[in-house]
Image (cartoon, rainbow, N blue to C red; front, top):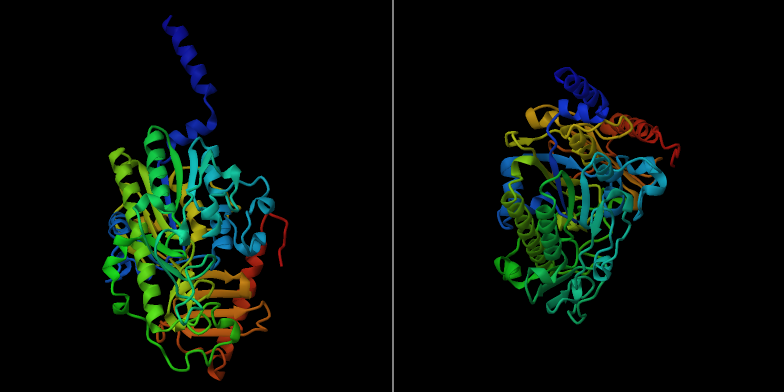
Length: 484
């Protein structure tokens, strides 16, 4: 009988799937909690140095994880950025430069969450992970440009947005103050009646907490997509109180002639001038934005509290980021799209159980999240992915994994190469709409464009060649698209 038992046991071991045996030899099977805010600049977070807008819950993630100071998005507005980091390809590899799902371009190639789903994880999203119209899609509660194959389940969080009862004011193109609160991609501030659960992000936090409790006994990849501080800047009244009166808000310096040395394509699509926002309305925009950030941060806290209560803190990788940055009056620019640091740089915090908290100054990209988290969880590597595995930085934050970051602004056919010393921005592949070059050591706020200076002619030539090489590299992939 003993001999028969040994033979049976041997046969069972040999019959085990190779992948299962492989996983046993690899790294721990962590859960993944991916939290993403919408239109968030890192400069609005207290863990990144803001002294006015307090974000204690996002700070909690930073206190336990690695906070990246030079993380860049790959597209400076929602659609291309989200399609990029979820698919694993740069926007110019797939041609997804707008508000569409990458699925038609990538075919049966697996997305980030789908890779985990196929490995046995419960994969779900709550609200906006791929592009979803704000405020329109949130008012309707629809799926937006989502990819159904990426999820085991998906949930939307409908909310009233700018229609929320309360004190609402349109700041954009309303110089006489007579225009009521209006919808669309418009600067509107609403100090809303009611509690957190009236609004989309409150509902998102509630559903995320429910899912953590329901699935705490098996591995999960949970995407939690908060839509604040995307316009409209709507949040319950209590979140506005720390920023009242709004006229106490500070604005960035206004430099006379700031736009004189940059090409027309370099002037952002929303400015204090074309939005007709006087100083009072600019300050209220900052206050309303901060109130939205504070509200969103509170929702992050609810999710973190549930994770802790479920006993999953030591089993879960927590990531916090945004799809791109945001201008709050720098250069008299507002919102996203620009390729300046305020718009192209994002907050990024990665917390992995057992790893020491740190600050990392290496250039990283949102595109790196897919291969990095797959590596941390011991999933099969995919050579086709265009990001890098930056997990070594979590053990040695002094390492460098990139010489430069690459981002694009498809709406204005703009490209950014950002290295230690220089920020190079080019409009059109042939530079026909202009170039910007900034010395980031001497001019970190990017006030003086050096592209037309004779002494920088060779440097501009070098950057043109580097950009052409980067685009060739991006387009050399397994998709067979060769997008132009």
